[in-house]
Image 1 (cartoon, chains in turn orange, cyan):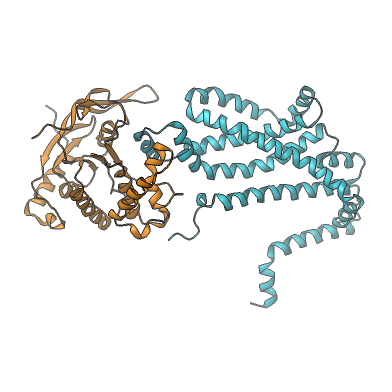
Image 2 (cartoon, rainbow over the protein chains, first blue to last red):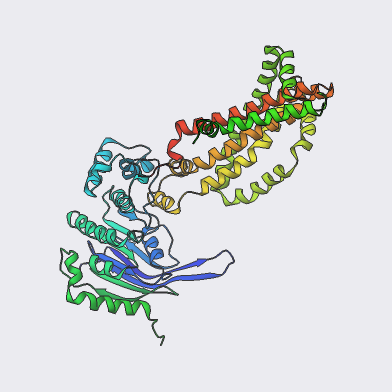
Length: 259
Length: 258
């Protein structure tokens, strides 16, 4: 394997709550993620997978260990990273186009024509060309999340951090969005870290699945996903799919017996 | 439905108001309540005729001036204060208790003190109006500025956007519904503030007119001033609602979601 572009070594995170007690959210995380690899983080609620994503994004400082991206320690948010959140979190007063272009407005104070052209292109890429002038509240949940994805791609980041991006959507829309994401990544390959609760989603999308356990959040297992690319819904019918899904489900739901 | 009934249904608010006025008039006549105790609507209309238009307009104008000046001052003070409180936990801990103390002090009790301190004239009245108005404004603004979805703020941080841009492009727009509901409450408070100020010191104004008329047992005249005050409050409230609808329609909940 070529050397990883995201390297986590002994990463831990402890939150101090208002009553001065502390909670260990993450402990001893070692993980390397290669260029253009798709890694899913999966685990029960409270296993710190979203926290881990925020540490990589530079939104939270790690309490222990080191996080390096392109061999540089992460101390603040970086330009190479795009983030997609669980909720689309669009600005309700802006059109789809302006929402996609918003990061540049926020950073530069105004949107230049080149950015607007790029935003227009991205809106087309996520299949919303007919809705470009609509407001978010005129769109369905799936369409809103497409806008969120388009927004995260505006500055063409190498790394995409996605925090349960499809979890608020209904099952059918989820599958549709997963395929959409696969298509986008085939056209513009990126390194993706994808937090999810859904085992089928993780199997369908990722190259490796990091199974985490809670209290404190730790890596329990890292599973290679063998299915060939390009993937489609046919991947779901692969004979290995159900067996792997069951294996992972067992790992997530049974607590490891401590030595 | 009978056409008459349909008509009544459509104009129910107006008919209710007319009915109440008629009942008021009737009660005053039936029980022969003297006008200096409680005037009938007809007495009030007659009393309005005893003023000249410029007289009434003069009182109206001096009250409006204080209301607007105090209201604008309150906005000018409360926005920076709210932004400071939102940005700094330290300022939040130190300023908010002071604001609560100021707000807990009965404004009617402080009004004479303010007049002595600042002298007669418009200034103390504007200060009183501002004092009564700005606390609810600050609290609503802080609530609004803090109501921004956490993920949008994370987006802003992930872009390393400046605090200024975050304030103007994200927090302020998200706070707009809070700002307008506060402005609507506060404009009526501002009218109260102006009247309190006029009760303490004034040579003109609708509050002054009420005080002057009642001291002369001219009850119908004081009711004229009262009616104008009510109309003034309603107009100002309407004005704010119109501004909201005209320029901030995007912040209003959509009536028919697609």
